[in-house]
Amino acid sequence: MVFGGPAGTGFRPRRARTAVACLTLLLAVAIAMFMTYDLKGSLDYALELRGRKVLGMALVGFAVAYSSVLFHTATHNRILTPSLMGFDSLYVLIQTLAAYFLGTAAFLQIDVRLRFGFEVLAMLGFAALLYRWLIGRGERDVYVLVLVGVILGTMFTSLTELVMRMIDPNEFTRLQDRLFANFSTVNQDLLVISAVCVALVTALSWPLFGRLDVVALGREQATNLGVDHERLVSRALLIVAILVSVSTALVGPVAFLGLLVANLSYQLTGTFRHRYTVPVAGLLGMVALIGGQFVLQEFLNFQTRLSIIISFAGGIYFIFLLYREANR
Figure 1: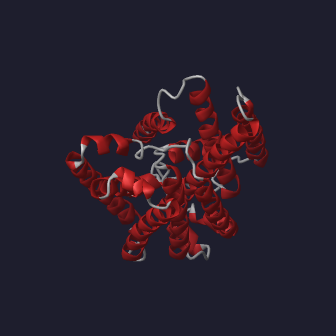
Figure 2: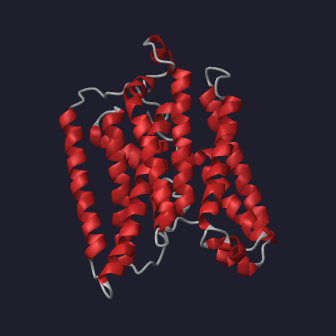
Figure 3: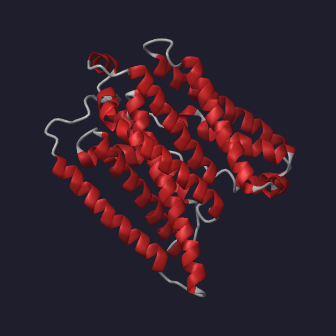
């Protein structure tokens, strides 16, 4: 499902600004409800704990949304998401191998910053190898990159299933908690590190939005307009790799969240201009995580993980997008 120019027909900036304003208000309400609803015990402790959760969810929601929008631009396809490249599968494989060789308890005793750094570097190294090997080898290099990423992701999943069959049942039970995104135990040190990484990447990449709008037109159009398509796509994919690696290492994989919020942002703004779609997608991601976690925490008593619900809804939406494209 490819898309055309960065500005849809009849684009009205007021519509996009209204979407930003409404979502900002909705986010403020969600944060206020999450922070203040049914407070018990020590207020200082409760507010600090909830504040850390809110910051973690806001950070992950923005990073996943931002990376998905850029990935759609780089691949010229609205159905693909960075998770299809194998990042989530690689993270799960790392956790599974650690449980098999070290034991989950021993692995968790390693300094959390070292584990975080190792996981981020492993995913970035995986992305760097793919990009260096495939980018710049032809006109369809991005499509080959995605295809290879999907194949490697499938291979990682198969290896994970093989190792899981050899793991002690008790270790497997402990491992299960590591394979889904967990927003309840966000480490404060990792939160600071992640926030700095996301803030730096955002500040350095924000000036690229004008040229990324041109990239959204396609390779030939961007080249004719004087944009170095290959170089800009490589930079966009590097940004995607950093954001996805940091967010995944911080809380775990959140499949399909990016697909949902990115496509909803296109619908709400009526454009593909990054100065509008990125903020709207980021706000949608934060509202989805904070609001969803609030409902689970206060009304459903954590009967399931938020990431499971998001994956279910995202999977349905993914099928809907495929069906709609097939009938065009």
